[in-house]
Length: 474
Image (cartoon, rainbow, N blue to C red):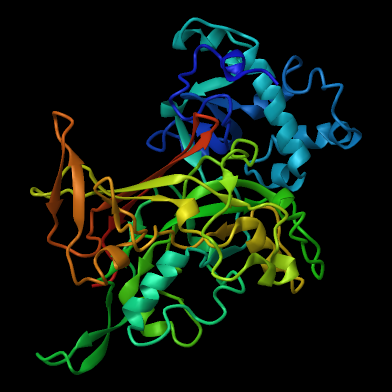
């Protein structure tokens, strides 16, 4: 295989996180929402540097995608080339993902070959590359949710978050339930409210408990906009090819059912959730919004960012056979969360937390898939799996001056202490400050970004951004 320097097109900054080793897929159209973009066709795209490649047009071009199929491709890949072309003309990634990893790898290989074949001198020369006619600047496109999501399942694989929350709400009981270290615990979320980054998030309302006397010993139930709106730092996984109902996916094959990964913010109303979650778990406290990043990062881009997660409390051999991975499959990325608040005394952008996913996840996505289907549940292309909130270990609550917790619930200890932050000053110096609030306010903007490592090269997930807007109920 060629070295990175041989593959890299000269017009792409290798530090941007979207170089030739990444090539995430997306759905977009050319234009901004402020124009007539909403009425235009949605396009399957792929990002390289600061540009998006129109795969629909490239696949149709006589000298474009698969004009010269690679001789080393297996027969299945060659046979599905017409299906790949058709899938790249669809308004979502579902059809493309349904073709399995062979289709994704073939498209990725062709793009890498074409991009590395031309050595322009600077970022202007991208237009002279073989893909130049099919490229648009990222700033000039509108991005959409990459899949039509049929089902969404949120797991609870972040063991330090689970322990921390357990101690908050059950200080005299078990932090973790007895089943936690034996199975990847999860619940069925609401796919209808999964939205792409930059979609405004309306503050939800619902039944909550409030003190009814000055001592706080009595409580009343009222219906009110949530007073404890929170974010959750998660990774998301989109299913590629599915499985038939009644046919479990073996752990040895589970990774081949993954199309790619995104950042995920599972917005939560902690007071609504606290009142409703016994005995069936979260409902209105979580079903109002889940945000995902628009760039779907492939397993190929992350092959060197997969390994062991949190050491299992029990010996791995004690796991049920259907959960024993041939090799550790936890994805390692560093996720940074910032909070922007449009208030006089708040910094322009306040960094809150940074967490390495491998230090927080007990279970991998292949294990989640194996468990999800062990009873015969059918997964379909475009189904979304969430990792659950990811927090760092309790013995390292702060690293490099930043929190290692993946939610305000943990950072503020359920509203007991105010939100801390760090901001970049004009000189580049960062100074720690203290907020006067414990949960999210209307107008707040939460931004999560993530970087993984590919042999020293940055693989970026981009950002997932959400701005809180006022409740529709008083």
